[in-house]
Length: 130
Image (cartoon, rainbow, N blue to C red; front, side):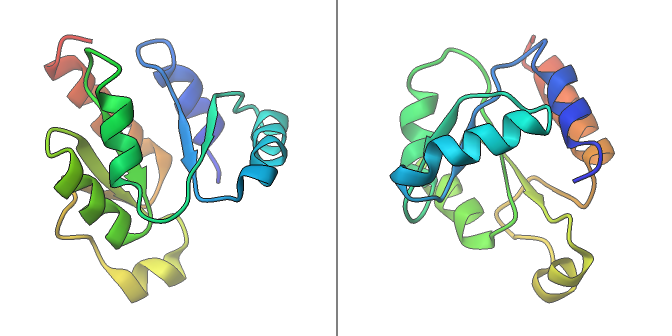
């Protein structure tokens, strides 16, 4: 996705970037290597199913704002139910998918590119003192 590596690099100066991805555990390292090859060398957590529980567990480990981006509405809803304080971004880069889904009712923001997503994230971090 154009702009992803640059946006995440800029954000990583203010926040810990973690990739929570639904891949089998056996494929976690492959996913991490692929992301790193594209300039996104961040911790990767393999997940199965809805992401709310994992986000809640991660949020319990930090004293900082938590921001979650996903393209799947049921993952956004799951995070809203599991950890309401999380800032939720419904991020759909593929215009075909965006036409099919529309914005999630459980998101705080809907974005289709990294410029808008980065701006929203930077604003939330600033509001929370980060």
